[in-house]
Image (cartoon, one colour):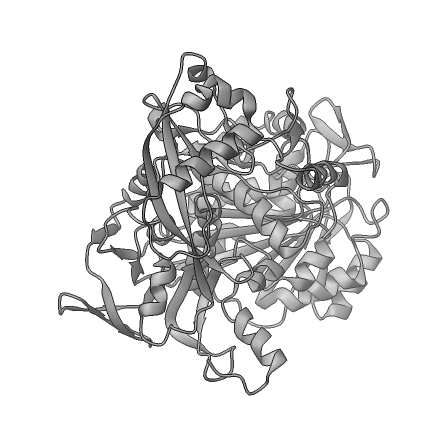
Length: 614
């Protein structure tokens, strides 16, 4: 994927105009009316939303998001006509997203849409390629795809019920209205899918017809004589949402975020963990919400970037942290520990892959990214505080995959669920049939020291070779060590000395402000991180390694191996799994989904040895 160039626009009163394409985003003075007639009414959305039941959903796809007017009006129509438990998924592509200030100015002219413009503006992504998920309401999700519409829709796995074929006029932007786009629309259309567009240009009519749509020319809006509507063959039928019973094994960061994602979609959720809430690797006083910038937009690096952005939207939506004792999200200072890392940050800035909203230079050297620090245990408690979630302390001893999975617990009881999500880190290998999972551990120890009058003024978390947390309740947390040779979370005085030496080497001024050689470690905590061999987590359906790696154990999914970054990456992974189980578009592109899929390790082994078995 390529870096994203934001839109260059000017305003003529309340009408935004693209200076690059020399075209308006909508008909001057008639934006909402044009959008309502051309897209909402032409797609018969009120009628279709009214026909939904509480367990059904529709997907509306769009080729040019622009100001978001079409999607916002669709959201308003859905809120008015659909039953409260039905769901709407809006999926829109945009190659040149608006700058936040331009978006705010455009949306400010439509106060009647404030219920949906507020969440859109708060969640508006930085201009980075890929999928960006924004929740406009409890039952309305918007997925923005920043990039070329034809390319994204061609590679998408999303099935669409209604298309908004929007963008700058074909004469102004012929590259978008391509044969590749029309073929992609056909590929992603469900039976009976409708198409609505403002244009009647011949290349659009011919492109839709050649792709297999039945096209009709109708009266245009305003000064336009004609426009097109179209339909894909077949009869339109809404899809059923999958909602039922899910058990989450593990109450750490991965388990708590997964539980919340399922509960918000209407599932009955049971979380079980004999250690209690956030008492494993998620149990540190504080953790840093951060990522590592890179100029290379590989699936792995895009996961790091999009995971951070997704997590920040979760924190905003749930109002966390709720007080300073739970953390602060006012950015992270990065002081690269060596020249190689400094060059990596600098190249990320120069590449355009990390826009200024995500990466900028620090006044005292180093760099600043979004994020901050939070208390993991408080965050897990916030996530699990939902009427659809029950937390128990049993351990899973065995499970039987199937349409209704039967789970045996250590107290002799059994549970029958539709889905089992395993979030128990390396302990997952102790479950029957999961010993093959490519998981490994590293022991880490974090140290705590008392704040000084000078250090109490520090506001941001700092990352270097380790990290330093601002004072909370008079204590700083710093560390942490990495020990790949130990699988026991024991406290080691040597590790405290390593953490202090690292602090002195990379943050000498901070080391002196904390007392220098007189710093006293007053507390510490050790834990085990769980990693995969390629450092990405395992997120997706549990494969059956004895057979075709694309065959899966029905109703069993994994959310494992987040290493030291579960606090940042788990919200995106949780939404991915909940949408996978429940139906509807996923919050990540196929390349990223495949990079996280557990079967990737089996496929790699089979490429080396076709007869490989675990």
